[in-house]
Structures are given as structure tokens and as C-alpha cells.
Image 1 (spheres, rainbow, N blue to C red):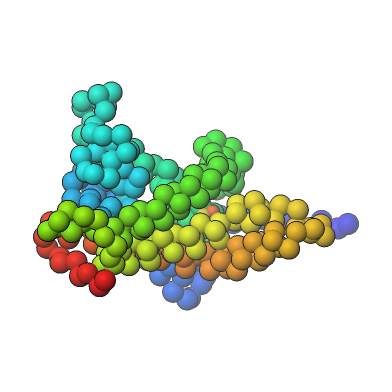
Image 2: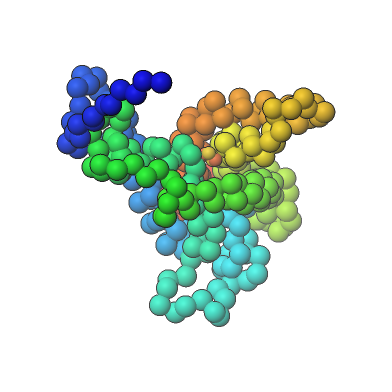
Length: 267
Ligand code: FES
């Protein structure tokens, strides 16, 4: 076979012959992800205004230790280091956070938007060597499939929180009664979007369709694979929608708790 040697001339960062607005997408990703990280970090360290009545902010769910009635194991544990400000969110946010951080879609998005590696197709990048994700530290991104199991567990926990968000305490008699408020719907929509994002994960498709190149003996498995594949086709959309919904759900509970916003009871 004839081999034609090709010499690639290195370009400067951002240098390109493209004339389209290739820079818009990385810029929007940079602004969107930066805004989320700043808000989520601020909200996580607040340690207050994360519950309102039966509502619990998804940033703080499940609340393992804390002062609210939602806490599973009571107040702040004695082993918490004194020099670190306590917030229940710090115990659980790393898990969904790392699930997103290692997501195949987000990896491509922040490699381009934050590391300019490359900023877009056929645009100059800061590095001259391509090492891929085969060496440290990026090889650690392969833990994504294990964070998927944790993310699925969180879906069940957040769904349970939606159920709890229908249990209102009657201020007159103190009895618990069924009800639906705007906050219930906000938390429910958030779970739907998170579920659509999680079940469309690339690793989910491997999980449910690992032997899809063989004639399947299970129509249930085929249905799960088709469902996951359909969601995967909109993975980028659900990645962003669920990112915003989880922040908006926290904001909604926070504003209600601070008395800035009034929750409307529908039922
Ligand atoms: Fe995006 Fe797994 S690939 S969540």
C-alpha cells in the first residue's frame, strides 16, 4: 500500500481558515457551565434555606446530617473537621457532580470551552501532542460508568423527595395531608429531566444492551436499549435542561425559605 507522507503545520491557538461563527458554541458553554459552577458552589456552602415545608433542595438531597426535619441521621456529626464550614450539601454533591464531570458529552464540551483543546474543529489548539484519555490524569474519566450506578440511586432518592413534597403539614391541627404546590411540580420536573439525562448516558446503553450484537432473547432488554438510545440522541439537550432544572429547583426552595417568593398551593 502506498503511504503518502503528510506534514501537519502547527497552528497558533485559535488560528483557523474557518469563516463561520465557530466560537459561539464554546463561548456559550463556557458562560453556562461557569455560571452553574459559581451558583452551585455558593448554594452548597450556604448550609441554610435549603428546605421549605415538605420541599428539599436537590443540592441537599439526601440530607444525611443537618438541622432540618429531612435529615436522616440528625445534626452535624462530631467527626466533621472544625476548620471546614458544615453544609449537608458537601456530603452528597460530589457524587452527582463527578457523574456530570465525567460525562462523555460534558467532557467534549469543557475540553473545547475551557481547555481550548481544540476550541472547535480545524481550529488551532495550545498543545502539539495528542495523548487522548489513555494516560493519567484523563484516564480517570473512565470511572464514569461507576458513577452511573450512583446517579441511578439518586434518581430513586429524588423521586422519594417528590413524594415527600406532597405531604403538607396542616398548620392548624398539625396533621399531614396530601397536597401539591408549585414547588412539588418544580421538584417533579427536575426528576423527569434528570432521569432523561441519566438513562440516556452512553454507559447506560452498554449496561442494558451489552450484548446487542447478538440476537437478543429478551424483548425487555431490547426495549430498554431502544429507550436509552432514543434518550441518548438528545443527551446534550437533557444535559443542559437538567443542569438548569436542578439549579432552578434549589433557587425556588431557597427563595420560598427566605420569604422572597410565595409558594402557591394547587391542591
Ligand atoms: Fe453523559 Fe453518561 S455519557 S451521563
